[in-house]
Image 1: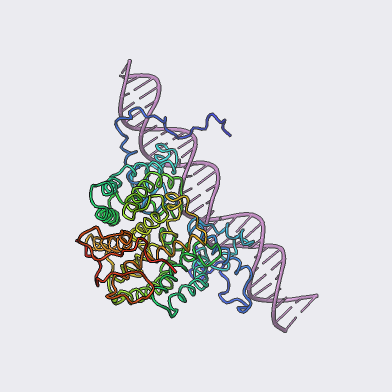
Image 2: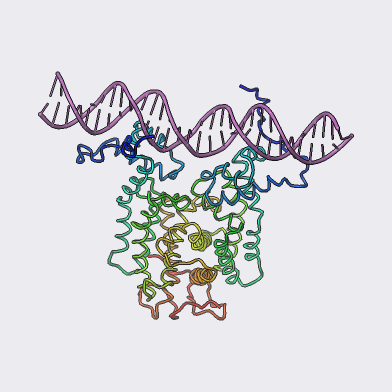
Length: 244
Length: 244
DNA sequence: GTCGAATTCAAACATATGTTTTATACTTCG
DNA sequence: CGAAGTATAAAACATATGTTTGAATTCGAC
């Protein structure tokens, strides 16, 4: 009904008057949207819900972000700049024995799931994205998933003496990741089969230690001779037990 | 506007005339609904979509199942009766060394994810339920999750010499489960960080073998003395390496 | 203070979707 | 055959939700 030139609707003038001082309602919308989207996922979240929670009008979302998807993607981008990644990256890059680094990474990731503040945003939103993808999924993977996985490959590859591109290295990395992610994605399932499990910081430490033990038991199998001083005995086999 | 007695709407007479010969459209609806719900999840699926795919009228769903949720729960129940569980249960109950059983369970579960026919229904629907729960989640967990997990606890508990209720046993079971589930729930994520991974039956066998190796490396750490003949060296420690 | 642009607001709009109604065909049994 | 209950179909209905509109309001610059 409208000419293709008049397509601009409620959209704001792309560049606001004061790009320096940030718009308070815009900020508030982003903040609130982040939480609610992370909780309920993209589809199940209504912009009315967000607007009310942000104390703004319903039209504010379309005015500031064009449409619902615009708000969502911007909220994702904003959250990707948050601090969590730094914690993991720091854990991955610190100068320490690889076993220590691996344990640190496991711990950092696990701990991010019991915090209710923003940093666990990535995993919660990722859980929804995996079940019901939106265009933001690609961003999430490229900006966060890939670099972390890559670094993890180098770490584990170094420990088992194989290149990062080797399938075995990747299999090991996925095994470690899987043990962590199950506590994030399958929480309701865990609550059902293991009702006594309380996710206190203390318990999470225990879980992290277990995952570390569990994983290193296999990974250290690859070392031709024992190198780490304090650990208990290690296998001498270069290759772990062959499947028959 | 209506009296509380006239509340019955399109609902069918609860007990159809011929409970023996099953209604063809009812069956078709259940069948189609199962597939679509598994693909898109409860919320993202519309009953019009289902009706059209089943060649039925939109009102058919409400007529035969009361409402959308009725169709969904019945579809879940129907699918729970399907064959998949038997495969896993058989794998878990066969008379064989526990290592063999564990490997078999891993393989059966992993293989269920590359089939496009019904049996992988449970996992696909579970993935959606975990992100966006419905009343069916409890059923899924109680009827499938819990018994399998319980049997797995006994299996692993036996291998590490601890009772099924021990936290360590549960941690190990979750570690094994997590390694499997990550290939099911985090498929898009894996596709992003490991694009070359093709889920062919062959590759799935390799993955299953890896998960078996990875897990048994730790589990067999618990055996005070080497019992299995063909395996490589094992630690003598009753407890695996202590975290510092 | 006044003008103009930017922002906010209440209301309307359009569409999607679960549900219900009403009428019509169909099946079974007497 | 004919009556009663059953199943299907088309349409209407109600509601939720993303989006747009146009007026009111705010805010900065002159």
